[in-house]
Length: 78
Image (cartoon, rainbow, N blue to C red):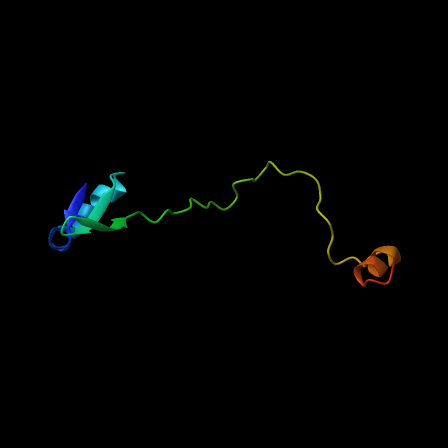
């Protein structure tokens, strides 16, 4: 749907609802399209989404590195 700036100001709430329902809304100055209203995509982040799917122990970051690994990390190994 394409509407003029005046119609967009008058019906902004309705236009937002139309966009959220999946409709494309273009705002025009006269007959020239100038902007499109688009929804902001929200991620559906959930804590614990992989609970019970990850098994085994991960690396222990508090354990000291092996001497060879430490030398590689510090750029001293060849």
